[in-house]
Image (cartoon, rainbow, N blue to C red):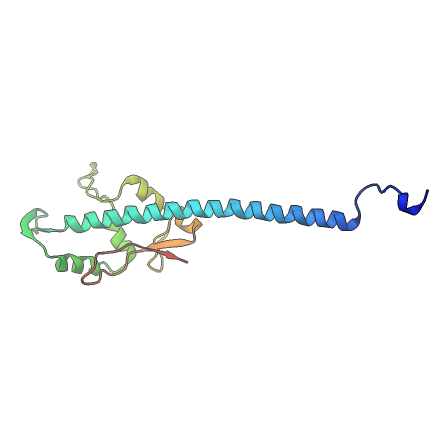
Length: 165
């Protein structure tokens, strides 16, 4: 048998390394696609949470249109947006502003739904700390984002801003 007609069995080292490299590249692409999918899902949930808090904030602003008497009764007198903006800006932190949107209890056992956030949204934020004027949830942390409720500037609407970390 001559060397040129010799049958080869198996892979050469170069072929094996090349095959392993291709498999490694394909695996890294698959892992990247899966992890980006999870981050995208968290970003969608973060936007939904931002929209829910923004909607609650808008409802709070509208609820402040009537002046409350010292006895806690809404009067027929209408407050200006400037007065409502002052009330909002006197709440110095995102946490204080967010707390205004949550339901408040009246009486000993009855919960009067005077808040503007639904239970599902509140549950997303419960258990997460407020710090550095940041509002976080599991989805926001997964997306590496947070919400902030900045001061309400004159001539604008109050805003809930979704920020990247």
